[in-house]
Image (cartoon, rainbow, N blue to C red):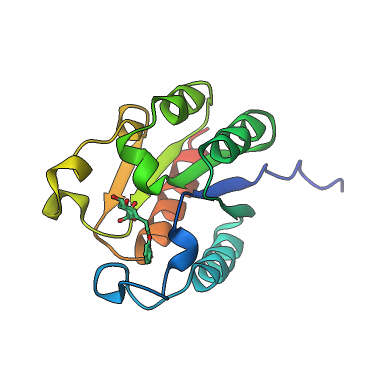
Length: 152
Ligand code: CA2
C-alpha cells in the first residue's frame, strides 16, 4: 500500500526577545526556556500526527520570509510575533497572503498589561488568539490547528 501524502509542517514562529524566555522576567513569562517550548511542541505534534518547524528571530523580515515559505510549504502557522504584534502591518500583510489556519499566541495576558499591548495587527488575520495561558498556549494553539486542519 502506498503511504498517504504526508501533511505539510505547521510553522511555529517566534518574534523578538523570545530567545530570552526562562532567562529573564519569569514573573511575566515563566521559567520554561524556548528550547523547552520547542521540545514540548514537537512531542505534542507527534501525538497529533503533525510535524512542526519551530523558529525564533529578532528580525521582522525573517518572520516575513518564514510566513512566505509557509505559503508553499506549510499547513498552518502558530505565531507569537512578540512586540511586532503591536506594530507590524508588514507581518499582517504577509499573513494575509497565507491561506491556511493561523493561531496567534501570547504567553502573558496582554489585556492585563499596558494599553499599547491591547492592540494586535495580527489578530485582524488570526483564526484564533490565545493569551495569558503561559507557554501552554503554544500547545493549545497546535491542538486548534490540528482541529482546523482535520476539517480541510
Ligand atoms: O506575552 C507574549 O507572549 C508577548 O508576545 C511577549 C512579547 C511582548 O512584547 C508582547 O506584548 C506579549 C515580549 C517577548 C519578550 O520575551 C521575553 C522573555 C523573557 C525575558 C524578556 C523578554
